[in-house]
Length: 380
Ligand SMILES: C[S@@+](CC[C@H](N)C(=O)[O-])C[C@H]1O[C@@H](n2cnc3c(N)ncnc32)[C@H](O)[C@@H]1O
Image (cartoon, rainbow, N blue to C red; front, side, top):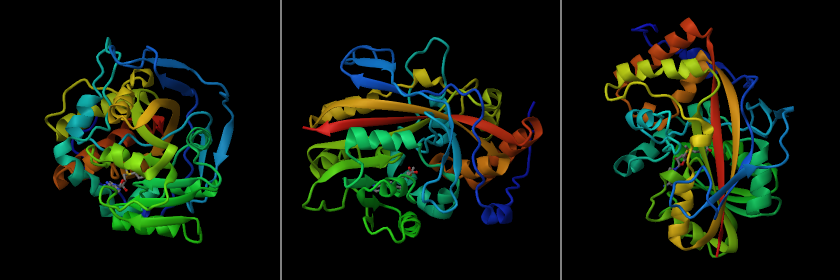
């Protein structure tokens, strides 16, 4: 069994001084790229939904590749075509844990990036509390995503891109490196400041500190609106219409979402639920991450369709395993809004207990599997 009370001992000095080492890819991940076109029935969509086709996408390879985006301290090793990103940050712990519940016979799993509307605005501000931590701990996205953004959404060389919720530039820097002209709108002043630092000297990018909902759209329309792990934080009453208004006819809305899925150090992610159960008593027992194939992306396609402003949504999916040391894992947890919003004592207890589990039973390293989903919809 895992230890009970571990004093929270994140080594702040070490965390502050260290540069994040390369993330190593664990062998044997079940990665792959798939495309999903709303229009024909398929296994990833809910019954009754208009339809979907789920199929293998070509170009699968498993070569080790080094991603070296112009990101300062960021240097990662990845295995294509998999991709990565942390578990999405939106849900509070209880909601997140409950959504991860995955009965064996369930084929359509709810996502963990659906913030409760009553807490959306509040939680969306938590990232700005420690922009440096976010910048240090959050991984970027895989090269294949940017290839697809260029090909499917026109977010390639010379493309005029509006990025919504750029954070500290996780997607902005690579997009700029690929020749996009970007206006990035970021609500958090600290996040925006770090983004500007990461983009220093890049003249084709402007980072604006503003809430997207209130930001006046410029007259010249964009070729693409891109939002990476951020669109769900925007007011659902505003986001689709405003994104459409920002685009030229035929321009693309590209929404990137991420989910933690089963894989990597699977036993750890089953066992760690005990920590959540202990420090968040409302966590239901027996939760575990869903299989990637059971993640349902239809909510986004439906929202796009309901807006009446876009054509069908085309999806691309990427998976990647990332290995974390104990301190790295605690840092990335510390960037999730749900963890940040916990009372201090519960958060400290939770993180200490998780640290004890990783150190005590998993040799100080765990591997987490992420599913990244890109949805591209073209404005009528
Ligand atoms: C989870 S972070 C994603 C950051 C980055 N795009 C990434 O891929 O890691 C969500 C970002 O959206 C920003 N955000 C939240 N609500 C926003 C709003 N209404 N307008 C603009 N940005 C917002 C947050 O401040 C935060 O930086």
